[in-house]
Amino acid sequence: MRTRKTRRRTTVFKALANESRCKIVEILAEEGEKCVCELVDRLGLDQSTVSKHLGVLRNADIVSFRKEGLNVWYSLHATCTYQFMKCIDRMCESGTGVELAGCQGQQEGHSDAGCQMELASGSNASGSNASGHNASGPDAGGTDRRDPERRA
Image (cartoon, rainbow, N blue to C red):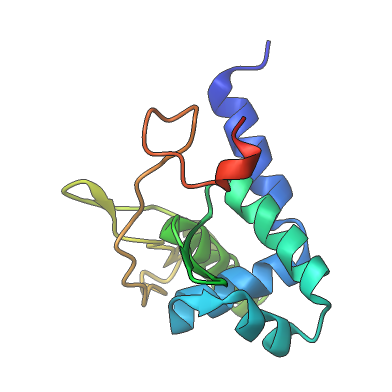
């Protein structure tokens, strides 16, 4: 039986299962809020394609948006998704000769401190400084930051 948590996780993983969407997450995490037009230029994709990718990320509550005049500005809402991507990067960079002791997120208050992947040698591969995220959307009981036209 699928639980709400399982469906939510699946939605997030499906949203991240695309190179362009992963690049969008990376850009927003490293550079902050971006207008759709800036993402179009950075990705070299059509505006409609970028908008569709942003819609998938928005529906998974990974990004949030605000409208300013005719422009729509996006920011990374779930910073933990980028930290997860960085954890995967560290796993890949560690090579085959290093055994991984695991990926252990640590809690600081209510925020996720990011990936604390430890190598078997005892050294820590972490360098993250994530501030965590607050889940939102219709299933999380928070403010729905998805496109107001799509909520109906």
